[in-house]
Image (cartoon, rainbow over all chains, first blue to last red; front, side, top):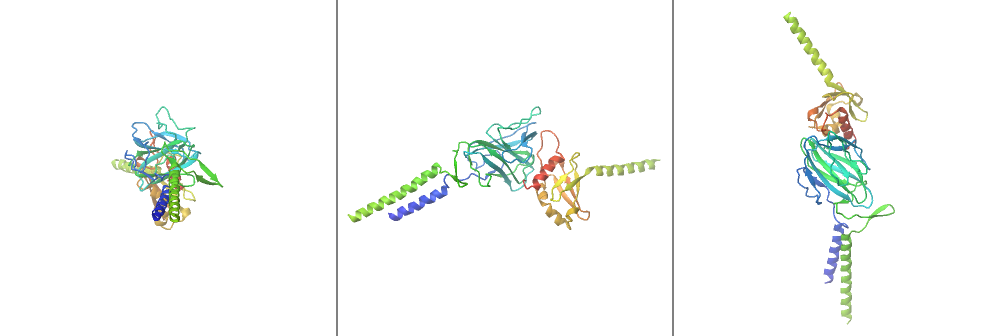
Length: 241
Length: 127
Protein backbone atom coordinates (compact mmCIF):
# COMPACT_ATOMS: atom_id res chain seq x y z
CA UNK A 1 0.00 0.00 0.00
CA UNK A 2 2.89 2.30 0.90
CA UNK A 3 4.60 1.57 -2.44
CA UNK A 4 1.37 2.35 -4.26
CA UNK A 5 1.11 5.69 -2.47
CA UNK A 6 4.73 6.60 -3.39
CA UNK A 7 4.08 5.62 -7.02
CA UNK A 8 1.01 7.84 -7.06
CA UNK A 9 3.08 10.74 -5.70
CA UNK A 10 5.64 10.35 -8.50
CA UNK A 11 2.88 10.19 -11.09
CA UNK A 12 1.26 13.35 -9.74
CA UNK A 13 4.55 15.24 -9.72
CA UNK A 14 5.31 14.06 -13.26
CA UNK A 15 1.93 15.28 -14.44
CA UNK A 16 2.58 18.67 -12.85
CA UNK A 17 5.87 19.11 -14.72
CA UNK A 18 4.41 17.86 -18.01
CA UNK A 19 1.56 20.36 -17.75
CA UNK A 20 4.10 23.16 -17.50
CA UNK A 21 1.79 25.06 -15.24
CA UNK A 22 -0.96 25.52 -17.74
CA UNK A 23 -0.82 24.08 -21.26
CA UNK A 24 1.57 23.66 -24.22
CA UNK A 25 2.29 25.84 -27.29
CA UNK A 26 0.19 25.59 -30.43
CA UNK A 27 3.18 26.69 -32.54
CA UNK A 28 4.38 26.16 -35.14
CA UNK A 29 1.15 26.36 -37.09
CA UNK A 30 1.69 24.83 -40.52
CA UNK A 31 -0.57 26.01 -43.31
CA UNK A 32 -0.66 24.82 -46.90
CA UNK A 33 -2.76 27.83 -47.95
CA UNK A 34 -5.48 25.53 -49.21
CA UNK A 35 -8.49 26.90 -47.35
CA UNK A 36 -8.29 24.20 -44.68
CA UNK A 37 -7.82 25.17 -41.04
CA UNK A 38 -4.34 24.02 -39.95
CA UNK A 39 -4.48 21.15 -37.47
CA UNK A 40 -2.25 22.96 -34.97
CA UNK A 41 -4.45 26.05 -34.91
CA UNK A 42 -6.84 24.99 -32.16
CA UNK A 43 -8.76 28.27 -32.04
CA UNK A 44 -12.10 28.45 -33.86
CA UNK A 45 -11.40 31.77 -35.61
CA UNK A 46 -9.74 30.60 -38.84
CA UNK A 47 -11.04 32.36 -41.93
CA UNK A 48 -10.11 32.07 -45.59
CA UNK A 49 -11.43 33.39 -48.85
CA UNK A 50 -10.71 35.15 -52.10
CA UNK A 51 -10.74 38.73 -53.28
CA UNK A 52 -11.46 39.39 -56.91
CA UNK A 53 -11.16 42.35 -59.23
CA UNK A 54 -9.28 45.51 -58.43
CA UNK A 55 -9.25 44.96 -54.68
CA UNK A 56 -6.14 44.68 -52.63
CA UNK A 57 -4.71 44.85 -49.14
CA UNK A 58 -2.28 47.26 -47.47
CA UNK A 59 1.25 46.54 -46.33
CA UNK A 60 3.59 48.68 -44.26
CA UNK A 61 6.04 51.07 -45.87
CA UNK A 62 9.01 49.11 -44.54
CA UNK A 63 9.68 46.15 -42.29
CA UNK A 64 7.83 46.91 -39.07
CA UNK A 65 9.22 46.88 -35.54
CA UNK A 66 7.43 47.60 -32.27
CA UNK A 67 5.14 49.45 -31.78
CA UNK A 68 4.17 49.03 -35.45
CA UNK A 69 4.70 50.04 -39.05
CA UNK A 70 3.42 52.95 -41.12
CA UNK A 71 0.82 51.80 -43.59
CA UNK A 72 1.06 52.25 -47.34
CA UNK A 73 -1.73 51.20 -49.58
CA UNK A 74 -1.17 50.84 -53.30
CA UNK A 75 -3.54 47.85 -53.11
CA UNK A 76 -1.67 44.57 -53.26
CA UNK A 77 -3.48 41.65 -54.84
CA UNK A 78 -4.72 38.89 -52.55
CA UNK A 79 -6.69 36.42 -54.69
CA UNK A 80 -6.42 33.84 -51.86
CA UNK A 81 -6.19 34.86 -48.20
CA UNK A 82 -6.49 33.40 -44.70
CA UNK A 83 -6.52 34.98 -41.24
CA UNK A 84 -5.67 33.81 -37.73
CA UNK A 85 -6.88 35.57 -34.61
CA UNK A 86 -5.03 35.46 -31.30
CA UNK A 87 -4.97 37.30 -28.00
CA UNK A 88 -2.15 38.75 -25.97
CA UNK A 89 -2.72 36.91 -22.70
CA UNK A 90 -0.52 39.21 -20.64
CA UNK A 91 -1.94 42.04 -18.59
CA UNK A 92 0.67 44.29 -20.17
CA UNK A 93 1.54 45.26 -23.76
CA UNK A 94 3.62 42.66 -25.57
CA UNK A 95 6.04 43.20 -28.46
CA UNK A 96 5.57 40.16 -30.66
CA UNK A 97 7.50 38.95 -33.70
CA UNK A 98 5.56 37.07 -36.35
CA UNK A 99 7.77 34.60 -38.18
CA UNK A 100 6.88 32.67 -41.32
CA UNK A 101 9.22 29.97 -42.62
CA UNK A 102 8.93 27.67 -45.63
CA UNK A 103 11.08 24.96 -47.10
CA UNK A 104 11.06 26.43 -50.59
CA UNK A 105 10.32 29.89 -51.94
CA UNK A 106 7.13 30.16 -53.92
CA UNK A 107 6.58 33.08 -56.26
CA UNK A 108 4.77 35.66 -54.16
CA UNK A 109 2.89 35.43 -50.89
CA UNK A 110 2.38 38.35 -48.51
CA UNK A 111 1.55 38.81 -44.84
CA UNK A 112 0.57 41.51 -42.41
CA UNK A 113 -0.92 41.70 -38.90
CA UNK A 114 -2.96 44.25 -37.04
CA UNK A 115 -4.36 44.71 -33.57
CA UNK A 116 -8.02 43.90 -33.09
CA UNK A 117 -10.33 41.60 -34.99
CA UNK A 118 -11.77 44.13 -37.40
CA UNK A 119 -12.35 43.34 -41.05
CA UNK A 120 -9.52 43.50 -43.57
CA UNK A 121 -9.49 46.94 -45.17
CA UNK A 122 -9.54 46.80 -48.93
CA UNK A 123 -8.04 49.15 -51.46
CA UNK A 124 -10.31 50.72 -54.02
CA UNK A 125 -9.37 53.05 -56.85
CA UNK A 126 -11.21 55.92 -55.16
CA UNK A 127 -10.11 55.39 -51.57
CA UNK A 128 -6.99 54.01 -49.95
CA UNK A 129 -7.85 52.90 -46.44
CA UNK A 130 -5.02 52.15 -44.07
CA UNK A 131 -4.81 50.82 -40.56
CA UNK A 132 -3.91 53.73 -38.34
CA UNK A 133 -3.84 54.55 -34.62
CA UNK A 134 -5.10 53.20 -32.31
CA UNK A 135 -4.66 50.09 -34.48
CA UNK A 136 -1.06 48.89 -34.76
CA UNK A 137 -0.11 47.34 -38.05
CA UNK A 138 2.87 45.17 -38.92
CA UNK A 139 4.29 43.64 -42.08
CA UNK A 140 7.67 42.90 -43.66
CA UNK A 141 7.01 45.76 -46.08
CA UNK A 142 6.20 45.41 -49.76
CA UNK A 143 8.09 42.18 -50.35
CA UNK A 144 7.13 38.65 -51.24
CA UNK A 145 7.77 36.39 -48.27
CA UNK A 146 10.25 33.94 -49.76
CA UNK A 147 11.35 31.23 -47.36
CA UNK A 148 11.79 33.22 -44.18
CA UNK A 149 10.31 36.51 -43.14
CA UNK A 150 9.59 38.17 -39.80
CA UNK A 151 8.13 41.41 -38.55
CA UNK A 152 7.04 42.86 -35.23
CA UNK A 153 4.28 44.90 -33.67
CA UNK A 154 3.06 45.70 -30.18
CA UNK A 155 -0.19 44.16 -28.94
CA UNK A 156 -1.92 46.04 -26.10
CA UNK A 157 -2.58 44.20 -22.84
CA UNK A 158 -5.10 41.37 -22.92
CA UNK A 159 -6.09 42.34 -26.48
CA UNK A 160 -6.77 40.44 -29.68
CA UNK A 161 -4.89 40.67 -32.96
CA UNK A 162 -5.20 39.28 -36.47
CA UNK A 163 -2.51 37.70 -38.65
CA UNK A 164 -3.16 37.80 -42.40
CA UNK A 165 -1.50 35.57 -45.00
CA UNK A 166 -2.27 35.77 -48.71
CA UNK A 167 -1.18 34.64 -52.12
CA UNK A 168 -0.32 37.62 -54.31
CA UNK A 169 0.70 35.90 -57.55
CA UNK A 170 2.13 32.58 -58.66
CA UNK A 171 1.97 29.49 -56.51
CA UNK A 172 0.97 29.31 -52.85
CA UNK A 173 3.38 27.88 -50.33
CA UNK A 174 3.43 25.81 -47.17
CA UNK A 175 4.46 27.96 -44.22
CA UNK A 176 5.14 27.47 -40.53
CA UNK A 177 3.89 30.31 -38.34
CA UNK A 178 5.66 31.09 -35.07
CA UNK A 179 5.08 34.04 -32.78
CA UNK A 180 7.85 35.10 -30.41
CA UNK A 181 8.19 37.70 -27.67
CA UNK A 182 10.96 40.31 -27.65
CA UNK A 183 13.34 37.86 -25.95
CA UNK A 184 12.92 35.31 -28.73
CA UNK A 185 10.85 32.98 -26.55
CA UNK A 186 7.34 31.84 -27.51
CA UNK A 187 4.99 34.78 -26.97
CA UNK A 188 2.28 34.61 -24.30
CA UNK A 189 -0.70 34.38 -26.60
CA UNK A 190 -3.81 32.24 -26.87
CA UNK A 191 -7.15 32.01 -28.61
CA UNK A 192 -9.59 34.91 -28.31
CA UNK A 193 -11.29 33.50 -25.21
CA UNK A 194 -8.04 32.79 -23.35
CA UNK A 195 -7.60 33.97 -19.81
CA UNK A 196 -5.14 36.84 -19.26
CA UNK A 197 -2.28 36.44 -16.77
CA UNK A 198 -0.29 38.84 -14.70
CA UNK A 199 3.49 38.61 -14.65
CA UNK A 200 4.99 39.20 -11.21
CA UNK A 201 8.51 40.55 -11.50
CA UNK A 202 10.99 39.73 -8.72
CA UNK A 203 14.48 41.16 -9.17
CA UNK A 204 13.88 41.71 -12.84
CA UNK A 205 12.92 38.10 -13.55
CA UNK A 206 9.33 37.59 -14.63
CA UNK A 207 7.53 34.91 -12.60
CA UNK A 208 4.34 33.60 -14.16
CA UNK A 209 1.40 33.06 -11.86
CA UNK A 210 -0.04 29.57 -11.46
CA UNK A 211 -2.96 28.87 -13.74
CA UNK A 212 -6.14 26.99 -12.79
CA UNK A 213 -4.71 23.71 -14.09
CA UNK A 214 -1.51 24.25 -12.16
CA UNK A 215 -3.50 24.90 -8.97
CA UNK A 216 -5.60 21.80 -9.56
CA UNK A 217 -2.59 19.53 -10.04
CA UNK A 218 -0.78 21.12 -7.11
CA UNK A 219 -3.84 20.39 -4.98
CA UNK A 220 -3.84 16.80 -6.20
CA UNK A 221 -0.22 16.38 -5.13
CA UNK A 222 -0.96 17.84 -1.69
CA UNK A 223 -3.96 15.51 -1.34
CA UNK A 224 -1.74 12.53 -2.19
CA UNK A 225 0.80 13.50 0.46
CA UNK A 226 -1.99 13.98 2.99
CA UNK A 227 -3.47 10.55 2.16
CA UNK A 228 -0.08 8.88 2.63
CA UNK A 229 0.47 10.69 5.93
CA UNK A 230 -2.96 9.68 7.26
CA UNK A 231 -2.41 6.11 6.10
CA UNK A 232 0.97 5.95 7.86
CA UNK A 233 -0.50 7.49 10.99
CA UNK A 234 -3.33 4.94 11.02
CA UNK A 235 -0.88 2.05 10.47
CA UNK A 236 1.32 3.20 13.35
CA UNK A 237 -1.70 3.64 15.59
CA UNK A 238 -2.92 0.11 14.83
CA UNK A 239 0.57 -1.37 15.52
CA UNK A 240 0.69 0.38 18.91
CA UNK A 241 -2.72 -1.00 19.84
CA UNK B 1 21.04 52.50 -106.09
CA UNK B 2 19.30 49.35 -104.90
CA UNK B 3 22.50 48.17 -103.24
CA UNK B 4 22.90 51.54 -101.60
CA UNK B 5 19.41 51.26 -100.03
CA UNK B 6 20.22 47.74 -98.81
CA UNK B 7 23.49 48.94 -97.32
CA UNK B 8 21.76 51.89 -95.69
CA UNK B 9 19.07 49.60 -94.22
CA UNK B 10 21.76 47.26 -92.88
CA UNK B 11 23.67 50.12 -91.27
CA UNK B 12 20.42 51.44 -89.74
CA UNK B 13 19.60 47.98 -88.39
CA UNK B 14 23.02 47.58 -86.79
CA UNK B 15 22.81 51.07 -85.36
CA UNK B 16 19.31 50.53 -83.90
CA UNK B 17 20.27 47.16 -82.39
CA UNK B 18 23.26 48.74 -80.69
CA UNK B 19 21.04 51.57 -79.45
CA UNK B 20 18.52 49.09 -78.01
CA UNK B 21 21.29 47.20 -76.28
CA UNK B 22 22.72 50.41 -74.93
CA UNK B 23 19.33 51.37 -73.49
CA UNK B 24 18.53 47.91 -72.10
CA UNK B 25 21.56 47.80 -69.84
CA UNK B 26 21.63 50.11 -66.82
CA UNK B 27 23.94 50.57 -63.92
CA UNK B 28 23.77 48.94 -60.53
CA UNK B 29 26.14 49.62 -57.69
CA UNK B 30 27.48 47.32 -55.03
CA UNK B 31 28.36 48.92 -51.71
CA UNK B 32 31.49 47.81 -49.81
CA UNK B 33 29.28 45.71 -47.51
CA UNK B 34 27.73 43.92 -50.50
CA UNK B 35 24.42 45.76 -50.77
CA UNK B 36 23.22 45.80 -54.39
CA UNK B 37 21.38 48.92 -55.51
CA UNK B 38 19.76 49.24 -58.94
CA UNK B 39 19.67 52.59 -60.68
CA UNK B 40 16.18 53.80 -59.78
CA UNK B 41 16.37 57.14 -61.57
CA UNK B 42 14.54 55.81 -64.63
CA UNK B 43 12.10 53.03 -65.52
CA UNK B 44 12.98 49.46 -64.63
CA UNK B 45 15.31 47.82 -67.15
CA UNK B 46 15.75 44.17 -67.97
CA UNK B 47 19.49 44.25 -67.42
CA UNK B 48 21.80 45.98 -64.95
CA UNK B 49 25.58 45.87 -64.88
CA UNK B 50 27.56 46.42 -61.70
CA UNK B 51 31.27 46.91 -61.25
CA UNK B 52 32.53 44.42 -58.69
CA UNK B 53 36.24 45.16 -59.03
CA UNK B 54 36.44 46.37 -55.42
CA UNK B 55 35.99 42.74 -54.30
CA UNK B 56 38.70 41.44 -56.65
CA UNK B 57 37.04 38.06 -57.12
CA UNK B 58 39.38 35.53 -58.70
CA UNK B 59 36.73 33.06 -59.80
CA UNK B 60 33.07 32.67 -60.58
CA UNK B 61 32.77 30.42 -57.53
CA UNK B 62 34.17 33.09 -55.25
CA UNK B 63 31.77 35.73 -56.57
CA UNK B 64 28.72 33.48 -56.46
CA UNK B 65 29.53 32.45 -52.89
CA UNK B 66 29.77 36.09 -51.82
CA UNK B 67 26.44 36.99 -53.42
CA UNK B 68 24.78 33.70 -52.52
CA UNK B 69 22.13 35.29 -50.30
CA UNK B 70 20.80 37.23 -53.29
CA UNK B 71 21.14 34.29 -55.69
CA UNK B 72 19.35 31.85 -53.40
CA UNK B 73 16.52 34.26 -52.53
CA UNK B 74 15.84 35.19 -56.13
CA UNK B 75 16.29 31.81 -57.84
CA UNK B 76 13.35 31.14 -60.13
CA UNK B 77 11.67 34.36 -59.09
CA UNK B 78 12.52 36.71 -61.92
CA UNK B 79 16.00 37.94 -61.04
CA UNK B 80 19.23 36.21 -62.04
CA UNK B 81 22.90 37.00 -61.58
CA UNK B 82 25.82 36.39 -63.92
CA UNK B 83 29.49 37.17 -63.33
CA UNK B 84 32.03 38.36 -65.88
CA UNK B 85 35.15 37.72 -63.83
CA UNK B 86 37.77 38.86 -66.42
CA UNK B 87 36.03 42.26 -66.59
CA UNK B 88 35.02 42.25 -62.90
CA UNK B 89 31.35 42.81 -63.75
CA UNK B 90 28.12 41.44 -62.37
CA UNK B 91 25.13 41.37 -64.72
CA UNK B 92 21.66 41.28 -63.19
CA UNK B 93 18.78 40.18 -65.41
CA UNK B 94 15.23 41.05 -64.42
CA UNK B 95 12.10 39.45 -65.80
CA UNK B 96 9.66 42.13 -64.67
CA UNK B 97 6.60 40.37 -66.06
CA UNK B 98 7.26 37.16 -64.13
CA UNK B 99 9.04 38.39 -61.04
CA UNK B 100 7.96 37.11 -57.63
CA UNK B 101 10.11 39.32 -55.42
CA UNK B 102 7.80 42.24 -54.72
CA UNK B 103 4.02 41.90 -54.69
CA UNK B 104 1.84 42.91 -57.58
CA UNK B 105 -0.13 46.06 -57.04
CA UNK B 106 -3.68 46.58 -58.13
CA UNK B 107 -2.30 49.30 -60.37
CA UNK B 108 1.14 50.09 -61.73
CA UNK B 109 4.28 48.22 -62.73
CA UNK B 110 7.13 47.06 -60.55
CA UNK B 111 9.82 49.71 -60.14
CA UNK B 112 13.56 49.63 -59.52
CA UNK B 113 12.94 51.32 -56.16
CA UNK B 114 10.66 48.45 -55.10
CA UNK B 115 13.26 45.88 -56.11
CA UNK B 116 15.88 47.89 -54.20
CA UNK B 117 13.71 47.56 -51.09
CA UNK B 118 13.65 43.79 -51.62
CA UNK B 119 17.43 43.65 -52.14
CA UNK B 120 17.93 45.71 -49.00
CA UNK B 121 15.76 43.32 -46.97
CA UNK B 122 17.73 40.35 -48.29
CA UNK B 123 20.97 42.15 -47.44
CA UNK B 124 19.76 42.73 -43.87
CA UNK B 125 18.75 39.09 -43.57
CA UNK B 126 15.07 39.85 -43.02
CA UNK B 127 13.92 37.70 -45.94
